[in-house]
Length: 379
Image (tube, rainbow, N blue to C red; front, side, top):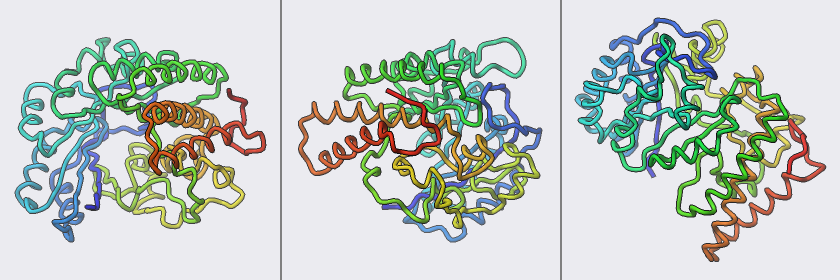
């Protein structure tokens, strides 16, 4: 299988929205120049092999605020590195994707995939993602049909905040109804400390179990989709949350290299971000006394170095409230998968292993002797 290497280019450090949960607390008017981008690309692809696949992701702020740079980069790569398999994507709020940008994306759809952030229904989206200036609806500023029809199996990233949690199931179902795969996630780096959130989440998850039971062929949203078999795997001494710093890196507008955008100056500020320049987390190890190191769910846990840093200030320590939210989602996803496997009448070895893993998840979730960051009783 081809190895995929991802590097992110932070085209600018600004945005036209003022999202309530945004983790980029140090925005500026800094824009990446083509000369800086060219140097990064040449360095990253200098030893590239034609058998490997590379992905350049444009990030912001809102990346399309620097659309001229994006066009220039794509043209440069396709001209100089035409013998390589290089693809492009961008994480966008969609509000600027009109006119020339839309036409250009259609022309380059074979190599460019814009990823849309869409936080559920219009009401939910506008609560979470207001414009920085003016009172217009950012939801209404998105050509949703364009993103839906540009590629097969389009994805929409839906971020859930405490303000939209009570509408979570409705929002996920709405995203599905539009024809998107729903990449639903919880906002990180914010305060989830409220028992009301747990009760609300349980009700929302129960609604989603019924929804996916009634729609067995629908791809389950990301927050409920896991490789459940991994709970059967032994713990790994040199545990890694992800490929940040190794198979994935990010470059700020000045060309400095970071593990991912979560450690760049736009997120942490220049003083704190400086600590992570060139970091690849190869020396990362859990303290043996760490609760996370002892947790059976560690191989399933959807947290990451950057989320932990934003929530607790420590790349290896997860937020206790997020721990509980994620555990509830793992259990819910396991229940949905159980119903689907039982109804499929599949008796393969892979299915039997998955059912064994689901049984383990059920037992561990309610194991009174298990130690978690948040031991709030759940049912």
